[in-house]
Image 1 (cartoon, each protein chain N blue to C red):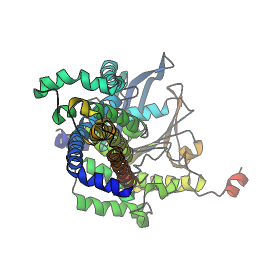
Image 2: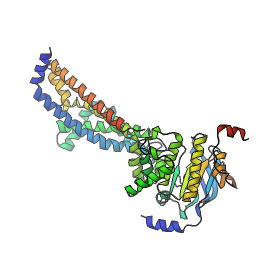
Image 3: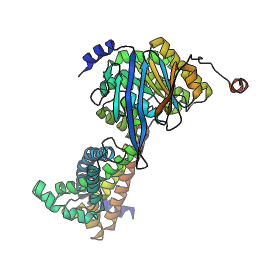
Image 4: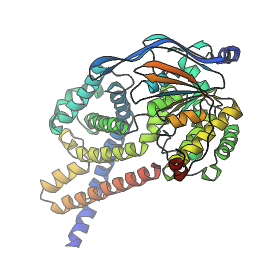
Length: 255
Length: 224
């Protein structure tokens, strides 16, 4: 409906891909109205890896879900790629983004390549081209030989890599990552973080990563917002120290 | 003794066949109604219920109420209560066609409740996932909910079908005929116990066949 117009407008969008202006959100928690997000101003630039850290319940995941339009703020405005994010535009705008989740959220009744192809099915693309691209992506995430596997037979790290291939199939400008490594062990976390870093460099994709794990944020993010009680308590620029594999032994001995 | 059963079977071959066709006729119609409308009402319950994407107390209450009422009235009384409705719709309150109406209603109610439960069993994150991947609301239903709930739904539909078969046996009271009625009227009331047992055996085989088919299909579709 606004498809053509949208891509023209988005190509004109400046270097700020996401902008939150005085955004607030209230939820009913235990029957009481609670201000979960309290007047947040925030922007995420093109090609950056932006981190959101905070305690469980600090509101960081809510911010992420407002950025992709899943949750509507009570007050304030959100701009995605230069356009106002509202109930009309959100279904179009969200298609320019994608998301990976803590619990991977793959469909168990689809096999690996079907999961990767799912977003293209929703967009009614040309199947043959998409299958080729899905195969390329599976080799990019190192899962070529698992193309026809069922999801239940994969390890956690493999599942998250399928989920990453699934986000990449639509060439999103932004990938939202909600605790992408929380369900994974050290080595698998390393694999996933390295992959995210690669994606950022190779495809110039903007990443927003929510995590409670400071190590994760430090290793890949260029800027990080610390969320406390629904507010940004600090905004810090980082020089990412890079992703390096650590064995348990190294991790214990390095301090 | 076996000869007596074979003799009875041969003697009643035509009525048995006729009753089987009547049962199949009632069953197929009410199964189709249950599948389409039951699934639809199940979705209505799921999306308007607590945690649903279109939470709406009054729609949920009305839909749920309809289902509870049809399921709570003793079925024989429900058939009788429905006679005027049959008459209004079909012009007659009796016969195989009239039997399809109460049978369909109970099938719809059963399958709707099963569907709601199967959809509730799907991972709660699925709506958010579908949205983040670019799905519309309709695609959320078709590509995500139905996809993930499918094996549960197949098993639920199998249970609904088996229940419908057992409900169909009392349709005789409004002239619905069918296997169960033949077993009661010709078999039990006429002291023809051989015929009664033949029909009971036949129905056991039908139920067993239905359940086996349902389990096999559900398993084939379940990759989780």
